Length: 165
Image (tube, rainbow, N blue to C red; front, top):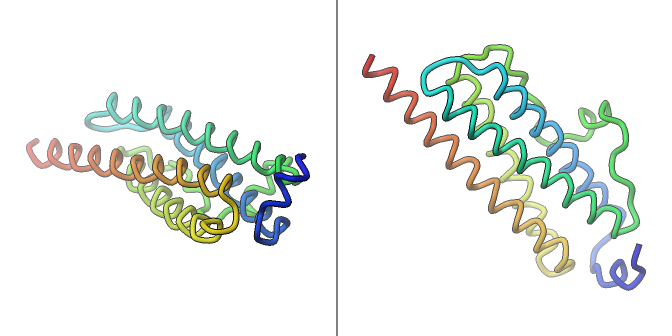
C-alpha cells in the first residue's frame, strides 16, 4: 500500500474500500451470470448472444481485477469468500434457470442497469476526492453502458426474429 496514494484520497478510505468491495462482489456475480448464461442459453440468434455474453463475462472479470488492485492500493482486502459476495452485492444475481434467450437477455440488462446506477453513485462520490478511483470507475461505467446497449440491441434482434416467424 502506498501511504501517499492513500493520503490523497479526500474521503473516508475505509468507507470507500467497503463500497469498492460491494462493486467487486457485483462483478464476480455478473461474471458468473454471463458465463453460465452463455453455456445454457437457448433460442433464436443464439450464437450472437453466446458471443456477446462470453465477451461481457471477460470484461466483468477485468472489472473485478481493476477493483482488486484499487482496494489493495487503498490498504484494503478484497472479499476473499465467494459466499460473502451475496451479502455485499448491490445488484444481486439472477440465475438463468429459464435458459430462453429473451429471459437471459432481460436478466442481464437488469444487471447492467443496476451496475450503471451503482457506478454512477461511486463516480459522484469520488469525483472531487479521489482521482485514481474516479478514473477507474469512469472506465468501468463506460463499459457497463456499452454492455446495456449491446444487450438491448440483441434483444431487439431476437424480438424481430420471433415476430417474423
